[in-house]
Length: 120
Image (cartoon, rainbow, N blue to C red; front, side, top):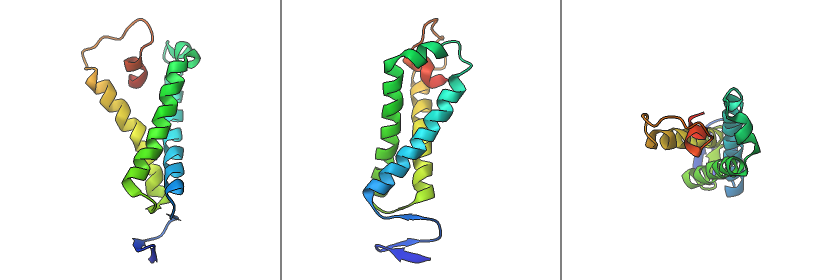
């Protein structure tokens, strides 16, 4: 164990700047969104999602929110792996909340829509 800026760190890589924490969170969010898009590849609406600026804006916002949420959780001191995990989980949690808020009984639309995008 070593002390970094008054915070006890045990093993791993210690992030000591707010920008570092934010960027690692963004990387986690990017990985989550990459997996989400990979999962969408078999969805019949995938070509619509791929061509739509709206869905790319949503993707970029999810990645940014991942970094922001990670920074809000840790400030300028975090373990890199933990910051990555928070960034990774943020879009997954948000996707589940949004899909759940739309209701399980909501039928899938014949056209691409935001709720179906979050459902995968």
